[in-house]
Length: 86
Image 1 (cartoon, rainbow, N blue to C red):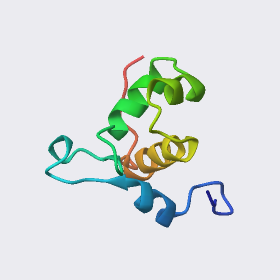
Image 2 (tube, rainbow, N blue to C red; image 1 turned 30 degrees about the horizontal axis):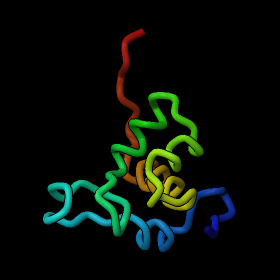
Image 3 (tube, rainbow, N blue to C red; image 1 turned 180 degrees about the vertical axis):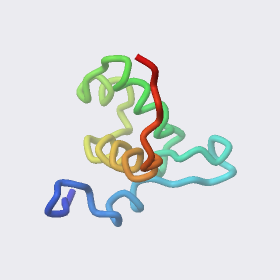
């Protein structure tokens, strides 16, 4: 997968791997060709799973799919910083 000079995945790589179809998973962004949502990938990683564990749990995923899910999430997060009380 190609990266920009600042380390971000190129938009085309993300677009080629992430889709949002109302007929699949109610339109939630998902890995193209699967019913695995970006949210499911992020949730597993946030819960402490390694990429290797994630790939073992979801054999249809590739490392590039996981990277695309992370890049998609980073690009679609609001730029404002939410207030989180300490």
